[in-house]
Length: 149
Image 1 (tube, helix red, strand yellow):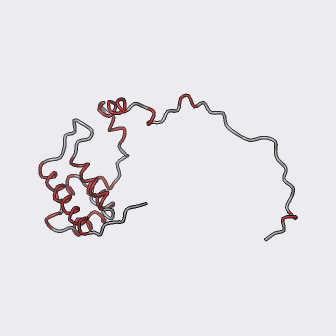
Image 2 (cartoon, rainbow, N blue to C red):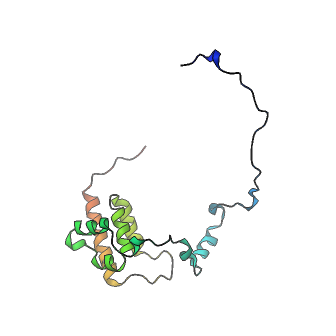
């Protein structure tokens, strides 16, 4: 440790650097009325602007996706989902370690929150339902976490 007496004396510069900013044009989404946000979500083209750019993993199952599906019990394997929507299957495989979030994701897949969605075929809906039931059975087997204080 150095001796405090050996430090150079403090010399204030006399100025603080800052940048002028006009905050009149900056608005956070929280400041917007909920009705405006809800109407915007129903407008054509809104959801297309919210999607991420496609990747190679959107077109085919990744290795992790294949391992995930083969690790599931036969009755819970979403074969048609993996064939027709590999992007969704890869996402589920990537987040499978967090069963509560996976359960929520599965429920979001079955619910139309955007309005006017085409939806999944009956076969895909049934597979998602069986997968959700499997996740529920896994969650029921887990010990409960103590409440946070």
